[in-house]
Length: 87
Image 1 (cartoon, rainbow, N blue to C red):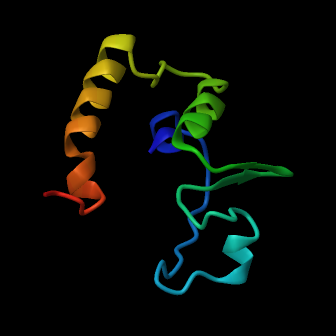
Image 2 (cartoon, rainbow, N blue to C red):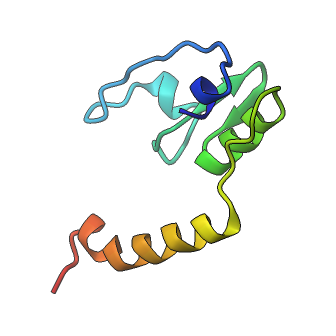
């Protein structure tokens, strides 16, 4: 989404997340997405990808500190549901 928002050309590679290929796991040992490979650089965290996108022309896509705080609060409240640990 960050690359699209900044009109940066990219190609998507879809993987079967239930049977991750070795070529994907070679990029990210944790096996998580997203992954951005730009030459020899491999980014595996959303914040890293946004920072990469911010280096390109166009309006900023980074969240304000207030928006980050709201997101953190929402994620914190929902984390047990994401992790399926609701009591």
